[in-house]
Image (cartoon, rainbow, N blue to C red):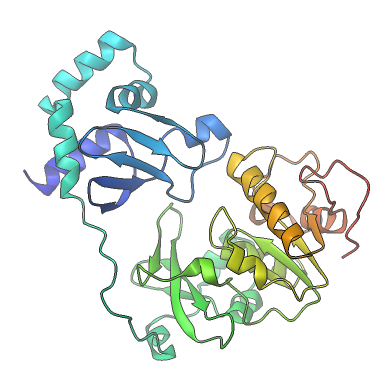
Length: 319
């Protein structure tokens, strides 16, 4: 069994896979966009290499290898059977076994010293990368965002929420879906990206660190990122001293994960007495603030509501 064999099988199904934990392989959900209308940016899809059973914890897509091939390729029963027989002579069992050649996920045995010196190998983001996201050089400097020239990846530093010591970073690919956390065991759910520079009375919570930069570029400071579709209780506690909080997760009318994140945050905000509003997407079909113009962002912020869908007139945020 060779690496080429594994890559060939994965290319046939056109699924981006990242890491493996035991018999479970993690990747981008191949049906996420069809089910939710938005591309899967955060790998929440897992497949068991022993049984072929798979599930996406974001959109809920699940099944076995047969249904996976059927849905991804759009084949009927006979075509699926024939496909599995002839495609590079890869049987169901063989294909699943080949997936086990993926790199194993291994949690760090000992804590890695994350001194600021580790960031010295990175440079300021190039102009073309900034322009592709409609973000300014000033916003990147404000949040301390850097660039890996060798990999063409964004470097998004994560810091301890109390002493602001560097604890790791998130890497995000330019022009592709790649991202990873470094080190692998960094506890991003216990901090917020941007917590070290947030001094505004109003906190804006987004999913992606790059959305923080987009909001800053549009004239809105105070954005922090949960670095994931859901916000943790530890992260909510960091927002308790804000006068008010505006949640700007992915458009709830388009994205199931965005709806669930907003609903979860509402419950946690009530528990901790946080005055919470939601970014108003109105009739926009944009996925998140990172895809919007300055004017659209300004409208969504100034018309923030206490309704997840932005339909209620009560509780205007007045930012």
